[in-house]
Image 1: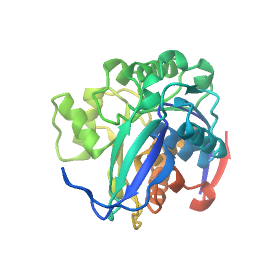
Image 2: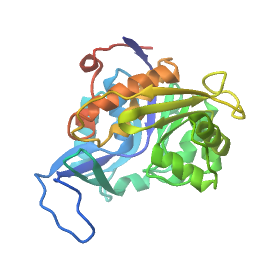
Image 3: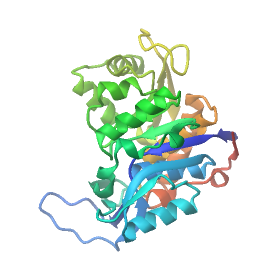
Length: 321
């Protein structure tokens, strides 16, 4: 299979992942002994940038790190993966963001984030040059809300498709939803969005998709279901289009069966793959099929960025546009 990739911009977070493996997750008030501490490059946005770059996309990341050991680690790692770091600020008196991660024997994880420099990223830190010729913009919620909104609105004004994953979850602002082209959520986030808007949905994906599109106004949705795959919901006309269709087009994309070792960063792998492939012109359903393969591969190795595959590892051919 051949994929085409384009130019991608990601605005958001960079974290140092501090990861410990345990037999199981501790209960409240309980202390467990884990394995060796591993420090790896992470942060949802940096993860997405690396996942896209390893598929051949031309990726630039807008963000902030501290002028410390973790910040230097992250910048060096991104450069090695071919991600442009020209628009990443180094803040001398603010620590780099960190994520404390525990991974249990079944591969499931818990994550606690300390934002650090990510919390200092401002709308004025987003240069137009980072967005101007991008084929897709990726956004999450590990940076201040006004910066997320500014990035989405500027990209939308330039005709750049905006992909939003509302994680860590909070209710997306109306101005942000109005500038979003594709909402990428897992099952928990889908339910949280509907609950936030005091809306319920039926059992079918046609009903669920219609409800989610109705309350958000976003034209296209990708709902990830873990090992079961994903569901793509679009207007009957395909990508984009009006959001008031009574029955949207729903496509169920199966997952790829693997033995999961660590699911850390698999959601970011999905969004990174969607950014890379759609920026090269791939339709959303086909892009989601690629994303499921990328995420499954990521689950078979420890960590987030270290687990992301290249096209050659997936047996794919890639060309840039």
